[in-house]
Amino acid sequence: MAIATLDVVVLDCPDPAALAGFYDEVMGGKVSGEGLGGSGGAGRGARLAFQKAPGFVAPEWPSAERSQQFHLDLNVEDMDAAEKEVLALGATVLDAADRERGFRVYADPAGHPFCLCRA
Image (cartoon, rainbow, N blue to C red; front, side, top):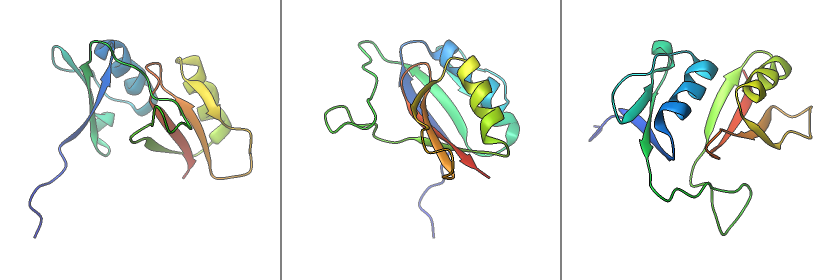
């Protein structure tokens, strides 16, 4: 018997509204709330929320000194098309050199790592 269920994953960041907008464009959704931006993924899957963190320092990938702590895996049908879209939205490439494997690693505009994964 579960003690709890997952409600939302909250990411620290310098600008909650901007990061919510990024993920809303990537996953579909609608920004909601004040002070804590939210991205619902258009009702598909877990919700994301974004919390303003004064003095936020982005993780580095890969790095033992500034560990990513966690990352998001986002399933896509067309890796090349999805890559083009997330880069246009402000993502940066962290590791996408191996074009044959089933994932590519990026950072969102606040520096959190995420992967585009072949569905």
